[in-house]
Image (cartoon, rainbow, N blue to C red; front, top):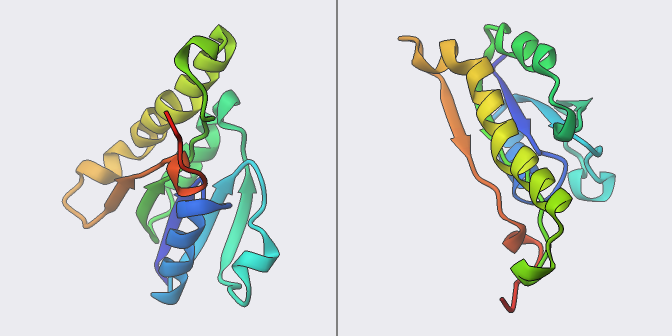
Length: 138
């Protein structure tokens, strides 16, 4: 059975992608800070959930996932933000935004890089936006 890893697949676009992959008969590994909402995941059962907080990147976790030869798809959808004027963002918030929304995604790709550049077929995508949850007047 083919497997997909969806980083940030607990809600929003990540959960929608995870459900679409399950519809395509994938076993989906959802790597997220929170478990998928059972009212949203519904009858979907072909997934495993692994907790991680991308503020504290767990390189060993992603190296282990990258070694599974049945994983042929990686989607990175993790991210967070808030609708606020730039002037109101605290330095610690900016650092956390960069760590989760950019640095962690790059680190995940590094862990899977041998798979991505190999001759074997491997799908990889990055998509994240808080605009899927709210619109910003800014």
